[in-house]
Structure formats: structure tokens, C-alpha cells
Length: 229
Image 1: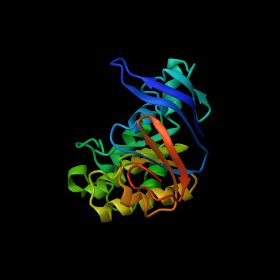
Image 2: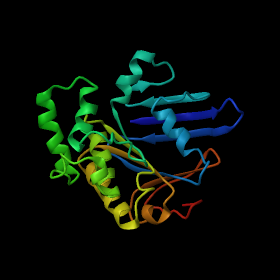
Image 3: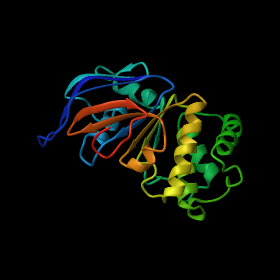
């Protein structure tokens, strides 16, 4: 569960990125966080992942209180999150299997766990036949599926997808979003940060709209037109 309670964020340069944001995401939800460039979306994600701290307000992430979290606890908090980036961030010199194994070994997974978990996750994202390929041998949509598999491989309770379809054509974008929807149906909480209104409007999901550092709407099945629901 994610909770932002009256959260403010002012950067050192004086930019007031968030101005009293309140948001709750319960376990098992699928939520779109939408808004124009500079609205505060990225700041929300950086706060949730512990990259930055709030100036004021309270923030809870999957049982961790980020207001007084010890530095040594932050890696454990981050293990509850799987992050998907727009630019994939795959290791080019490693195969698909090795990219996923690298992430699992980072938290001390055994070879037995790798052999059990990686084939399951690759099957889930439809890449079970591509385990020995390198990222450069895959299409953009396939690379994004690898990125999703990597985010899932350590079984996080929540997936955060930050503009996951920004580099894909409309058909591949829709396929990726449908895959995230399926992952959500299997029990993983999903937060998708995007400004792609046409894609958002194809799904009847909760849509939280942020603008100028404030939540301006929070509706399920709302029609997003770039500024309002």
C-alpha cells in the first residue's frame, strides 16, 4: 500500500514540485498517474522509491514509513517495488536470461531459484523462446517485455511503470498495457505514469490526474484529456 499524506516537495532551486498531495493506492489496484510535463509525476515516483525525501508530509510505502526510514532499510523497501523505465535500461552484453539472473543474484537468490523463477516470468511476458537472445536482437516491444520481466522476477508487491510505452508505436503500447493489466489480475499492484491520453482511455481504470503539483482529479474509468478527467 502507498500513502502520501499532505506531501510537499520543494527542490533546492526553489521549485515547488508538490503542493499538498494526498494519494492512497491499496494492494491489488491498477492506477494511472497522469498529467502534463512538469506536473509533478516524476517527483511522486522519486518519493515512492526513496530517491528523494519529502519537504513536508507523510509517506508510507508497503509497510515502510519513509519519514524515518533508516538508510540500511531503503534497499529492503525497494525490493517491494519493481520499476519499469521508458528506456528499458537492459544490459546489452547479457542475454535476456542473464539480465534477469543479474537482478535475482543482487538479492542473493540461489541458482535453483533462478532456474525456477526466470522461465516462469519469461513465459508470463511471452518471451520463453528468447531467453538466449541479446537485447540488440530484440524489437523495442520485446525489450520492454524483458524490462517488465526484470521488474517482476523478484516478486515485488508493486510495479511502477514510468512512461513504459514512450518509445513504442500504438499497437506495441497497447500490448504492453494489456500485459500490465494481466500482471495486475494475478495480484500485483500496478502504477503506470504516463501522459498518453489515448492509451489511458482504452482502459477502465482508476486515473489520478496531477497538475501544477496538485491532484486535480481521482476517478475510476474517467476520460483523460490531458488536463481534466
